[in-house]
Image 1: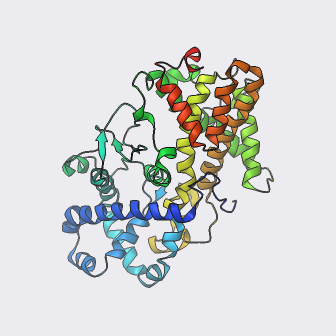
Image 2: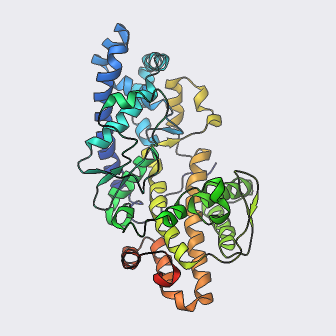
Image 3: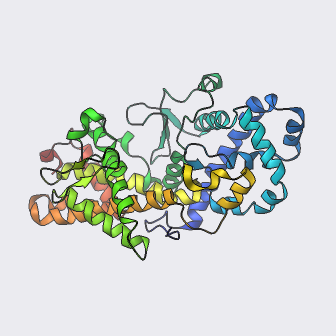
Length: 402
């Protein structure tokens, strides 16, 4: 797999800035974890393990890092590498603590409780259901943490009733870090827009459509990224590209031809081929570009926040301590890490290619299409222009956007 390729987006490509904000977010997270563990896990542990908590809480934290919550190990390679001495010296204790926690079904439960408490420990927060996917949270440019009011609970007993299943998405923490790197550029803007804008049509453009809506939403960000870019990546990655950028370019070119109604693409989800009847509308491209800036920036900081790994990655077959040592290996992308980052980069580039191709085709819309190009280069002025344009209009009709 490819060596890690540094981010190119401004602010999130500054390592010191990313590390600073990751440290802040992780400090709040592990404080919430400590409180939840003492309250909900410690009383359930056998005495020898409980005594170990008073002497070396780092062992327990490492046991949790060794647990894959969803698709994610919640530490970066840098963070794991910094603790290799402890991992090596305390390997037997880490393995034993992990075994006990796993047997008592406490690993996912404590993660759930921790994430829930983290949300309520954030300095400024607000419940909001309309523009947030189930069980997720978002940080606005004003650094207000918006959360689903039907998925986060002020009383921990409600979270415990959810059981030892994975409930939340640790990817949201990457969004926190990227937003903190430049809130006015990478913060979630949905909550600043009128409800007339963030309507059903808007939401359908940025989410994965259901089967009944699929035929009418084959330009939706969720569908193209999840289904079409996945098939493109899995097909093209077997070709001898020299660098990740070469693969990004190849995927972006085919995606752009899809948006221009020049080429069909195959879905990784159902194996069917999809094709647009006409080039994507300018108004649709505006919304998709805005959403991609938000998602792309988070993708670029993921490697500084956590490690993605699939079931067949090989690390899950190792003991918890050996798993940690494997995760601390030299910085080379695991398959899902390369796949996600390269697809986001390619998807963003495809919007740029599409906008540039549409400019001579739609001279009356050239100005807004140029703003799309500038926006995806992370230009704050273009973001302000597009958000102002949206705020002045009440729908996503092409006539009102221009």
